[in-house]
Amino acid sequence: MLRVFDYEKMPVVEIVNDILVDASKRGASDIHFDPQEKFLKIRIRIDGELSDYAEVPNDIKKNLITRIKIISGMNITESRLPQDGAIKTTLQDVGLDLRVSCLPTSLGEKIVVRILDYSKSLAGLEELGFSPDNYKKVLQMISVPNGIILVTGATGTGKTTTVYSILQRLNTEKTNIITVEDPIEMDIEGINQVQTNSEIGLDFATALRSILRQDPNIIMIGEMRDTETAKIGVRASITGHLVLSTIHTNNSLNTIERLLDMEVERYLLSSALTGIISQKLARMLCPRCKKKRQATDYEKELISKVLGHPINEVYSPVGCDVCGNGYHGRIAIQEVLVISQDIRDAISNNIRKADLRKLVYSGDVTTLLQDGLQKVEEGLTTFEEVLKLIELDDEQSTGEKLDLSSAIRDAKLQQHNKNTMHDVPTEAKPLGVVAPNAYTSNPKPTENETLEL
Image 1 (tube, rainbow, N blue to C red):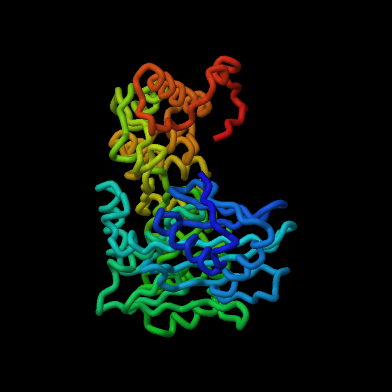
Image 2 (image 1 turned 90 degrees about the vertical axis):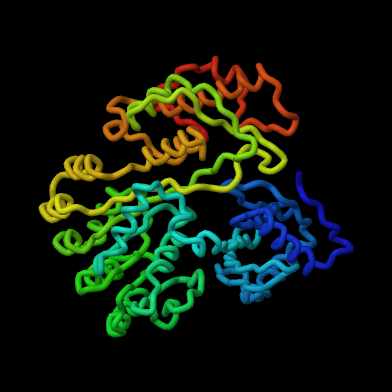
Protein backbone atom coordinates (compact mmCIF):
# COMPACT_ATOMS: atom_id res chain seq x y z
CA MET A 1 0.00 0.00 0.00
CA LEU A 2 1.35 3.41 -0.99
CA ARG A 3 2.30 5.82 1.73
CA VAL A 4 0.38 9.11 1.64
CA PHE A 5 1.81 12.43 2.82
CA ASP A 6 -0.14 15.62 3.56
CA TYR A 7 1.68 17.75 1.02
CA GLU A 8 -0.36 20.85 1.87
CA LYS A 9 0.48 20.87 5.58
CA MET A 10 3.86 19.08 5.78
CA PRO A 11 6.97 21.05 4.76
CA VAL A 12 9.08 19.44 2.02
CA VAL A 13 11.99 19.25 4.47
CA GLU A 14 9.99 16.98 6.79
CA ILE A 15 8.72 14.84 3.90
CA VAL A 16 12.26 14.19 2.65
CA ASN A 17 13.47 13.39 6.18
CA ASP A 18 10.58 10.97 6.75
CA ILE A 19 11.25 9.17 3.47
CA LEU A 20 14.97 8.73 4.20
CA VAL A 21 14.44 7.54 7.78
CA ASP A 22 11.53 5.23 6.97
CA ALA A 23 13.37 3.59 4.07
CA SER A 24 16.42 3.03 6.28
CA LYS A 25 14.31 1.48 9.06
CA ARG A 26 12.64 -0.86 6.55
CA GLY A 27 16.06 -2.16 5.49
CA ALA A 28 16.00 -0.64 2.00
CA SER A 29 19.23 -0.45 0.02
CA ASP A 30 18.07 2.21 -2.47
CA ILE A 31 15.39 4.87 -2.88
CA HIS A 32 14.32 5.77 -6.43
CA PHE A 33 12.65 9.07 -7.30
CA ASP A 34 11.28 8.42 -10.81
CA PRO A 35 9.75 11.33 -12.77
CA GLN A 36 6.49 10.40 -14.48
CA GLU A 37 4.21 12.47 -16.69
CA LYS A 38 1.59 13.05 -13.98
CA PHE A 39 3.59 12.62 -10.76
CA LEU A 40 6.92 11.68 -9.20
CA LYS A 41 6.96 8.00 -8.27
CA ILE A 42 9.02 6.92 -5.26
CA ARG A 43 10.17 3.31 -5.06
CA ILE A 44 12.37 1.52 -2.51
CA ARG A 45 14.52 -1.57 -3.04
CA ILE A 46 14.31 -4.15 -0.25
CA ASP A 47 16.11 -7.50 -0.52
CA GLY A 48 17.01 -6.72 -4.12
CA GLU A 49 13.48 -6.00 -5.36
CA LEU A 50 11.86 -2.62 -6.04
CA SER A 51 8.38 -1.80 -4.77
CA ASP A 52 6.23 1.32 -5.01
CA TYR A 53 6.41 3.55 -1.94
CA ALA A 54 4.65 6.88 -2.66
CA GLU A 55 3.51 9.27 -5.39
CA VAL A 56 4.39 12.98 -5.26
CA PRO A 57 2.28 15.52 -7.17
CA ASN A 58 4.03 17.47 -9.90
CA ASP A 59 3.58 20.80 -8.09
CA ILE A 60 5.67 19.42 -5.18
CA LYS A 61 8.13 17.43 -7.31
CA LYS A 62 10.59 20.24 -8.08
CA ASN A 63 10.84 21.38 -4.45
CA LEU A 64 11.40 17.81 -3.26
CA ILE A 65 14.14 17.16 -5.83
CA THR A 66 15.77 20.50 -5.00
CA ARG A 67 15.78 19.66 -1.29
CA ILE A 68 17.58 16.36 -1.91
CA LYS A 69 20.13 18.10 -4.13
CA ILE A 70 20.80 20.76 -1.48
CA ILE A 71 21.45 18.34 1.40
CA SER A 72 23.61 16.10 -0.83
CA GLY A 73 25.81 19.02 -1.92
CA MET A 74 24.75 19.20 -5.58
CA ASN A 75 24.41 22.27 -7.78
CA ILE A 76 20.68 23.09 -7.76
CA THR A 77 21.00 25.39 -10.79
CA GLU A 78 22.30 22.55 -12.98
CA SER A 79 19.60 20.24 -14.30
CA ARG A 80 21.11 19.22 -17.64
CA LEU A 81 24.09 17.15 -16.47
CA PRO A 82 24.37 14.11 -14.17
CA GLN A 83 25.58 14.86 -10.64
CA ASP A 84 26.74 12.87 -7.63
CA GLY A 85 26.48 13.77 -3.98
CA ALA A 86 26.49 12.36 -0.45
CA ILE A 87 24.55 12.77 2.79
CA LYS A 88 25.98 11.89 6.18
CA THR A 89 23.75 12.93 9.06
CA THR A 90 21.53 11.79 11.92
CA LEU A 91 17.76 12.16 11.54
CA GLN A 92 15.26 11.13 14.20
CA ASP A 93 18.06 9.33 16.08
CA VAL A 94 18.88 7.29 12.96
CA GLY A 95 22.41 7.57 11.57
CA LEU A 96 22.37 7.89 7.78
CA ASP A 97 25.21 7.52 5.31
CA LEU A 98 23.83 7.99 1.79
CA ARG A 99 25.18 8.25 -1.75
CA VAL A 100 23.02 10.29 -4.12
CA SER A 101 22.98 10.22 -7.93
CA CYS A 102 21.03 12.63 -10.13
CA LEU A 103 20.33 11.87 -13.79
CA PRO A 104 18.46 14.16 -16.24
CA THR A 105 15.68 12.36 -18.15
CA SER A 106 13.07 13.48 -20.68
CA LEU A 107 10.50 13.87 -17.89
CA GLY A 108 12.77 15.54 -15.34
CA GLU A 109 15.58 14.65 -12.97
CA LYS A 110 15.72 11.11 -11.60
CA ILE A 111 17.37 10.70 -8.22
CA VAL A 112 18.61 7.47 -6.69
CA VAL A 113 19.69 7.42 -3.06
CA ARG A 114 21.85 4.47 -1.98
CA ILE A 115 21.65 3.65 1.74
CA LEU A 116 24.99 2.34 2.95
CA ASP A 117 24.90 -0.33 5.64
CA TYR A 118 28.24 -1.19 7.23
CA SER A 119 26.91 -3.75 9.70
CA LYS A 120 27.99 -6.72 7.57
CA SER A 121 31.50 -5.32 6.99
CA LEU A 122 31.95 -4.59 10.68
CA ALA A 123 30.66 -8.04 11.68
CA GLY A 124 33.63 -9.75 10.02
CA LEU A 125 34.34 -12.37 7.36
CA GLU A 126 32.68 -15.15 9.30
CA GLU A 127 29.30 -13.38 9.00
CA LEU A 128 29.28 -13.15 5.18
CA GLY A 129 27.69 -16.55 4.53
CA PHE A 130 30.80 -18.45 3.42
CA SER A 131 30.55 -22.22 3.67
CA PRO A 132 33.19 -23.74 6.00
CA ASP A 133 35.23 -24.90 2.99
CA ASN A 134 35.08 -21.52 1.23
CA TYR A 135 35.89 -19.69 4.47
CA LYS A 136 39.09 -21.73 4.86
CA LYS A 137 40.06 -20.89 1.27
CA VAL A 138 39.57 -17.16 1.86
CA LEU A 139 41.73 -17.29 4.99
CA GLN A 140 44.36 -19.18 2.98
CA MET A 141 44.34 -16.51 0.25
CA ILE A 142 44.68 -13.51 2.55
CA SER A 143 47.53 -15.14 4.47
CA VAL A 144 49.76 -14.96 1.36
CA PRO A 145 52.17 -11.98 1.62
CA ASN A 146 51.89 -11.00 -2.04
CA GLY A 147 49.61 -11.58 -5.01
CA ILE A 148 46.27 -10.27 -6.19
CA ILE A 149 42.86 -11.28 -4.84
CA LEU A 150 39.79 -10.30 -6.86
CA VAL A 151 36.19 -10.10 -5.64
CA THR A 152 33.83 -10.31 -8.61
CA GLY A 153 30.14 -9.92 -9.28
CA ALA A 154 27.55 -7.58 -10.74
CA THR A 155 26.66 -4.20 -9.25
CA GLY A 156 25.00 -4.52 -5.84
CA THR A 157 26.21 -8.04 -5.04
CA GLY A 158 28.19 -7.09 -1.93
CA LYS A 159 31.70 -6.94 -3.42
CA THR A 160 32.66 -3.87 -1.38
CA THR A 161 31.31 -5.47 1.81
CA THR A 162 33.52 -8.52 1.23
CA VAL A 163 36.60 -6.41 0.46
CA TYR A 164 36.10 -4.25 3.56
CA SER A 165 35.65 -7.36 5.71
CA ILE A 166 38.98 -8.69 4.41
CA LEU A 167 40.64 -5.33 5.13
CA GLN A 168 39.27 -5.40 8.68
CA ARG A 169 40.87 -8.82 9.18
CA LEU A 170 44.23 -7.63 7.77
CA ASN A 171 44.25 -4.28 9.58
CA THR A 172 46.96 -4.61 12.24
CA GLU A 173 49.65 -2.30 13.56
CA LYS A 174 52.28 -4.27 11.60
CA THR A 175 50.77 -3.55 8.18
CA ASN A 176 50.63 -0.42 6.07
CA ILE A 177 47.34 -0.56 4.15
CA ILE A 178 46.50 2.01 1.47
CA THR A 179 43.30 2.08 -0.59
CA VAL A 180 42.31 3.91 -3.77
CA GLU A 181 38.54 4.27 -4.01
CA ASP A 182 35.83 6.09 -5.91
CA PRO A 183 34.05 6.86 -3.69
CA ILE A 184 35.33 5.94 -0.23
CA GLU A 185 32.40 3.89 1.08
CA MET A 186 33.47 3.51 4.71
CA ASP A 187 36.15 5.17 6.83
CA ILE A 188 38.31 2.55 8.54
CA GLU A 189 40.59 3.58 11.38
CA GLY A 190 44.23 2.68 10.77
CA ILE A 191 43.90 2.51 6.97
CA ASN A 192 45.08 5.22 4.56
CA GLN A 193 42.24 5.82 2.10
CA VAL A 194 42.65 7.85 -1.09
CA GLN A 195 39.64 9.36 -2.89
CA THR A 196 40.17 9.67 -6.66
CA ASN A 197 39.34 12.93 -8.39
CA SER A 198 39.38 12.76 -12.18
CA GLU A 199 38.82 16.53 -12.50
CA ILE A 200 42.33 17.21 -11.21
CA GLY A 201 43.91 14.15 -12.81
CA LEU A 202 43.94 11.93 -9.71
CA ASP A 203 42.67 8.69 -11.24
CA PHE A 204 43.31 5.10 -10.16
CA ALA A 205 46.48 4.73 -12.24
CA THR A 206 48.01 8.02 -11.02
CA ALA A 207 47.23 7.25 -7.39
CA LEU A 208 48.64 3.72 -7.69
CA ARG A 209 51.97 4.98 -8.98
CA SER A 210 52.31 7.23 -5.94
CA ILE A 211 51.13 4.54 -3.52
CA LEU A 212 53.94 2.22 -4.58
CA ARG A 213 56.39 4.82 -3.22
CA GLN A 214 54.60 4.83 0.16
CA ASP A 215 55.99 1.45 1.32
CA PRO A 216 52.62 -0.34 1.47
CA ASN A 217 52.11 -3.94 2.55
CA ILE A 218 48.54 -4.16 1.27
CA ILE A 219 46.89 -2.15 -1.52
CA MET A 220 43.16 -2.05 -2.17
CA ILE A 221 41.98 -0.82 -5.57
CA GLY A 222 38.27 0.06 -5.56
CA GLU A 223 37.68 -1.38 -9.02
CA MET A 224 39.69 -2.68 -12.00
CA ARG A 225 38.14 -0.30 -14.52
CA ASP A 226 40.70 -0.06 -17.30
CA THR A 227 43.79 -1.65 -18.79
CA GLU A 228 46.27 0.69 -17.13
CA THR A 229 44.87 0.14 -13.65
CA ALA A 230 44.83 -3.64 -14.16
CA LYS A 231 48.44 -3.70 -15.37
CA ILE A 232 49.72 -1.55 -12.50
CA GLY A 233 47.78 -3.61 -9.94
CA VAL A 234 49.13 -6.90 -11.29
CA ARG A 235 52.71 -5.59 -11.39
CA ALA A 236 52.37 -4.27 -7.82
CA SER A 237 51.32 -7.72 -6.63
CA ILE A 238 54.42 -9.27 -8.18
CA THR A 239 56.76 -6.82 -6.44
CA GLY A 240 55.86 -7.98 -2.94
CA HIS A 241 52.45 -6.40 -2.25
CA LEU A 242 49.10 -8.01 -1.50
CA VAL A 243 46.55 -6.36 -3.79
CA LEU A 244 42.77 -6.50 -3.30
CA SER A 245 40.33 -5.30 -5.93
CA THR A 246 36.91 -5.82 -7.49
CA ILE A 247 35.90 -6.45 -11.08
CA HIS A 248 32.54 -6.87 -12.83
CA THR A 249 32.47 -10.49 -14.01
CA ASN A 250 30.17 -13.45 -13.34
CA ASN A 251 32.53 -16.21 -12.21
CA SER A 252 36.15 -17.25 -11.84
CA LEU A 253 36.67 -18.32 -15.44
CA ASN A 254 35.21 -15.08 -16.81
CA THR A 255 37.50 -13.11 -14.50
CA ILE A 256 40.61 -14.68 -15.96
CA GLU A 257 39.34 -14.03 -19.50
CA ARG A 258 38.46 -10.42 -18.65
CA LEU A 259 41.95 -9.67 -17.32
CA LEU A 260 43.48 -11.14 -20.47
CA ASP A 261 41.12 -8.99 -22.56
CA MET A 262 42.41 -5.98 -20.58
CA GLU A 263 45.83 -6.79 -22.08
CA VAL A 264 47.44 -8.04 -18.87
CA GLU A 265 50.39 -10.17 -19.95
CA ARG A 266 49.82 -13.88 -19.47
CA TYR A 267 53.10 -14.53 -17.70
CA LEU A 268 52.36 -11.72 -15.22
CA LEU A 269 48.77 -12.83 -14.58
CA SER A 270 49.75 -16.46 -14.07
CA SER A 271 52.28 -15.57 -11.37
CA ALA A 272 50.31 -12.73 -9.74
CA LEU A 273 46.78 -14.11 -9.38
CA THR A 274 46.25 -15.65 -5.93
CA GLY A 275 42.51 -16.19 -5.81
CA ILE A 276 39.06 -15.14 -7.02
CA ILE A 277 35.90 -14.72 -4.94
CA SER A 278 32.75 -14.59 -7.10
CA GLN A 279 29.44 -13.84 -5.47
CA LYS A 280 25.75 -13.11 -6.00
CA LEU A 281 23.01 -12.20 -3.53
CA ALA A 282 19.88 -14.32 -3.10
CA ARG A 283 16.87 -13.50 -0.99
CA MET A 284 16.80 -15.38 2.31
CA LEU A 285 13.76 -17.32 3.43
CA CYS A 286 12.02 -15.87 6.45
CA PRO A 287 12.91 -18.22 9.34
CA ARG A 288 9.55 -17.61 11.02
CA CYS A 289 7.20 -18.74 8.28
CA LYS A 290 9.13 -20.91 5.80
CA LYS A 291 7.58 -24.34 5.20
CA LYS A 292 8.83 -27.61 3.81
CA ARG A 293 7.36 -29.11 0.66
CA GLN A 294 8.09 -32.11 -1.51
CA ALA A 295 10.82 -31.43 -4.06
CA THR A 296 9.83 -31.69 -7.73
CA ASP A 297 11.37 -34.36 -9.95
CA TYR A 298 13.49 -31.70 -11.61
CA GLU A 299 14.78 -30.40 -8.28
CA LYS A 300 15.61 -33.92 -7.11
CA GLU A 301 17.45 -34.70 -10.33
CA LEU A 302 19.47 -31.47 -10.41
CA ILE A 303 20.47 -31.55 -6.73
CA SER A 304 21.39 -35.23 -6.98
CA LYS A 305 23.66 -34.60 -9.97
CA VAL A 306 25.20 -31.36 -8.70
CA LEU A 307 25.64 -32.21 -5.01
CA GLY A 308 25.97 -35.97 -5.37
CA HIS A 309 23.21 -36.98 -2.96
CA PRO A 310 19.40 -37.11 -3.10
CA ILE A 311 16.98 -34.72 -1.45
CA ASN A 312 13.24 -35.17 -0.94
CA GLU A 313 12.13 -31.89 0.64
CA VAL A 314 12.93 -28.21 0.16
CA TYR A 315 11.65 -25.05 1.84
CA SER A 316 9.20 -22.60 0.24
CA PRO A 317 8.22 -19.01 1.11
CA VAL A 318 4.86 -18.40 2.79
CA GLY A 319 4.58 -14.88 4.17
CA CYS A 320 3.93 -13.42 7.61
CA ASP A 321 3.59 -10.07 9.36
CA VAL A 322 7.40 -9.83 9.66
CA CYS A 323 8.45 -10.51 6.07
CA GLY A 324 5.28 -10.01 4.02
CA ASN A 325 6.33 -12.20 1.09
CA GLY A 326 8.22 -15.09 2.66
CA TYR A 327 11.69 -13.55 2.32
CA HIS A 328 13.66 -11.49 4.80
CA GLY A 329 17.20 -10.29 4.10
CA ARG A 330 19.71 -11.62 1.60
CA ILE A 331 22.50 -14.17 1.65
CA ALA A 332 25.60 -14.41 -0.51
CA ILE A 333 26.15 -17.32 -2.90
CA GLN A 334 29.88 -17.66 -3.44
CA GLU A 335 32.48 -19.36 -5.61
CA VAL A 336 36.02 -19.26 -4.19
CA LEU A 337 38.89 -20.29 -6.45
CA VAL A 338 42.44 -20.62 -5.13
CA ILE A 339 44.78 -20.48 -8.12
CA SER A 340 46.77 -23.72 -8.29
CA GLN A 341 50.04 -24.30 -10.10
CA ASP A 342 48.20 -26.21 -12.84
CA ILE A 343 45.95 -23.22 -13.49
CA ARG A 344 48.97 -20.89 -13.53
CA ASP A 345 50.67 -23.08 -16.13
CA ALA A 346 47.48 -23.22 -18.20
CA ILE A 347 47.13 -19.41 -18.22
CA SER A 348 50.77 -18.97 -19.14
CA ASN A 349 50.62 -21.59 -21.92
CA ASN A 350 47.44 -20.12 -23.46
CA ILE A 351 45.42 -23.34 -23.47
CA ARG A 352 41.96 -23.46 -25.04
CA LYS A 353 39.03 -21.99 -23.10
CA ALA A 354 37.29 -25.37 -22.89
CA ASP A 355 40.38 -26.98 -21.38
CA LEU A 356 40.84 -24.08 -18.94
CA ARG A 357 37.21 -24.46 -17.88
CA LYS A 358 37.67 -28.16 -17.13
CA LEU A 359 40.84 -27.42 -15.20
CA VAL A 360 39.21 -24.67 -13.11
CA TYR A 361 36.02 -26.55 -12.29
CA SER A 362 37.41 -30.06 -11.92
CA GLY A 363 39.63 -28.99 -9.05
CA ASP A 364 38.89 -28.05 -5.45
CA VAL A 365 36.27 -25.40 -6.13
CA THR A 366 32.63 -25.13 -5.10
CA THR A 367 30.78 -23.52 -8.00
CA LEU A 368 28.11 -20.86 -7.59
CA LEU A 369 25.48 -23.45 -8.49
CA GLN A 370 26.78 -25.94 -5.92
CA ASP A 371 26.98 -23.33 -3.17
CA GLY A 372 23.49 -22.07 -4.03
CA LEU A 373 21.95 -25.53 -3.95
CA GLN A 374 23.69 -26.27 -0.64
CA LYS A 375 22.00 -23.19 0.81
CA VAL A 376 18.68 -24.42 -0.64
CA GLU A 377 19.22 -27.74 1.11
CA GLU A 378 19.97 -25.92 4.38
CA GLY A 379 16.72 -23.95 4.08
CA LEU A 380 18.42 -20.57 3.73
CA THR A 381 16.99 -19.72 0.29
CA THR A 382 14.84 -21.28 -2.42
CA PHE A 383 15.52 -23.29 -5.55
CA GLU A 384 13.75 -20.54 -7.49
CA GLU A 385 16.09 -17.82 -6.22
CA VAL A 386 19.19 -19.80 -7.16
CA LEU A 387 17.97 -20.48 -10.70
CA LYS A 388 17.16 -16.80 -11.21
CA LEU A 389 20.73 -15.85 -10.35
CA ILE A 390 22.85 -18.59 -11.91
CA GLU A 391 23.00 -19.76 -15.49
CA LEU A 392 22.94 -23.53 -15.66
CA ASP A 393 25.94 -24.72 -17.60
CA ASP A 394 25.31 -28.07 -19.29
CA GLU A 395 28.80 -29.47 -18.98
CA GLN A 396 29.44 -28.09 -15.51
CA SER A 397 26.22 -29.15 -13.84
CA THR A 398 24.49 -32.20 -15.23
CA GLY A 399 25.91 -33.06 -18.60
CA GLU A 400 22.56 -32.69 -20.35
CA LYS A 401 20.25 -29.88 -21.45
CA LEU A 402 18.35 -28.38 -18.52
CA ASP A 403 15.06 -26.59 -19.06
CA LEU A 404 15.08 -23.60 -16.69
CA SER A 405 11.57 -22.55 -17.68
CA SER A 406 10.09 -25.90 -16.73
CA ALA A 407 12.02 -25.97 -13.47
CA ILE A 408 10.71 -22.69 -12.18
CA ARG A 409 7.18 -23.38 -13.38
CA ASP A 410 7.16 -26.79 -11.70
CA ALA A 411 8.25 -25.22 -8.41
CA LYS A 412 5.59 -22.52 -8.65
CA LEU A 413 2.89 -25.00 -9.62
CA GLN A 414 3.70 -27.33 -6.75
CA GLN A 415 3.62 -24.47 -4.26
CA HIS A 416 0.32 -23.28 -5.74
CA ASN A 417 -1.24 -26.73 -5.48
CA LYS A 418 -0.08 -27.13 -1.92
CA ASN A 419 -1.52 -23.79 -0.87
CA THR A 420 -4.88 -24.57 -2.46
CA MET A 421 -5.07 -28.00 -0.77
CA HIS A 422 -4.21 -26.76 2.72
CA ASP A 423 -5.29 -23.82 4.80
CA VAL A 424 -3.00 -20.86 4.25
CA PRO A 425 -2.80 -18.07 6.86
CA THR A 426 -4.61 -14.90 5.82
CA GLU A 427 -1.39 -12.94 5.80
CA ALA A 428 0.37 -15.49 3.57
CA LYS A 429 1.41 -14.33 0.15
CA PRO A 430 2.76 -17.28 -1.87
CA LEU A 431 5.40 -16.25 -4.36
CA GLY A 432 4.76 -16.43 -8.06
CA VAL A 433 1.29 -17.99 -8.13
CA VAL A 434 0.17 -18.06 -11.72
CA ALA A 435 -3.20 -18.85 -13.23
CA PRO A 436 -3.58 -22.57 -14.03
CA ASN A 437 -3.98 -21.95 -17.75
CA ALA A 438 -0.47 -20.52 -17.78
CA TYR A 439 0.77 -24.08 -17.44
CA THR A 440 -1.69 -25.88 -19.67
CA SER A 441 -1.39 -23.49 -22.61
CA ASN A 442 2.26 -24.33 -23.16
CA PRO A 443 3.31 -27.09 -20.79
CA LYS A 444 6.57 -27.83 -22.58
CA PRO A 445 8.35 -24.60 -23.56
CA THR A 446 10.63 -24.79 -26.53
CA GLU A 447 14.36 -24.80 -26.07
CA ASN A 448 14.69 -21.18 -27.15
CA GLU A 449 11.71 -19.88 -25.22
CA THR A 450 12.46 -16.91 -22.97
CA LEU A 451 11.05 -16.98 -19.47
CA GLU A 452 10.06 -13.75 -17.82
CA LEU A 453 11.24 -13.89 -14.21
